[in-house]
Length: 196
Ligand SMILES: CC(C)(COP(=O)(O)OP(=O)(O)OC[C@H]1O[C@@H](n2cnc3c(N)ncnc32)[C@H](O)[C@@H]1OP(=O)(O)O)[C@@H](O)C(=O)NCCC(=O)NCCS
Image (cartoon, rainbow, N blue to C red; front, side, top):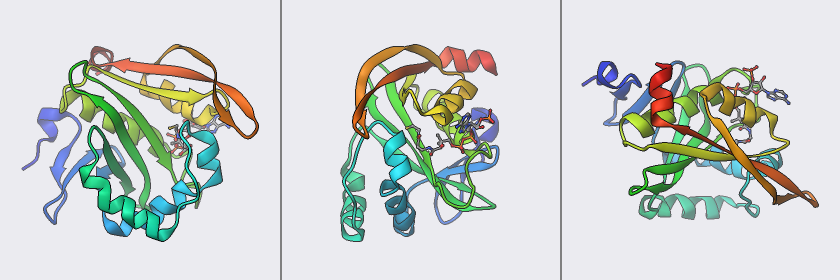
């Protein structure tokens, strides 16, 4: 069954009993066990660790598998693999802190720093796809996120997706020996609808 016309985001059957979100050149799909190598590579990537607000310790293959086994019991979040026909699995996009009463959720994304995959528009397309899914299928009202002030690529992606700057959190993130300012961003459902 194709729902593309009704939703505008291309919610489809992906074969093998999968539901996928298809948008422009990217497909968002559930995490499979054979994605663990990519996920481990990204969680251990020092550049991604520097650019994202959270933090993690070095992760082993064993720990990554344990994390995967616990994934289905995690509540209030949605993690999807970003895939393209040309490159296969290239990253992860997610919603966390899904607040079903206030209809708000935080978005995060990462694209592998390998093989010159970045800068081709996939990060923007994956975020746009998930925002549309959050508004049109899950009925969220506000999608928000944070960017560390030196993360220019992230800020550019958010601008391209139509996020607005809400304000600054002063010296809120500590990375590499220093506290850094963080910008808060959000997009409301009617702002997306008015773009279409
Ligand atoms: C943020 C991220 C997901 C973007 O992925 P991507 O596939 O490269 O994104 P896009 O190609 O759609 O857009 C990137 C934009 O940033 C721009 N950009 C990247 N680095 C830049 C820099 N140093 N200075 C200026 N612009 C820069 C690109 O030119 C492009 O903008 P354009 O289309 O106007 O040319 C990716 O860089 C990433 O995974 N970073 C590490 C994790 C992260 O920061 N996640 C976001 C915070 S949770």
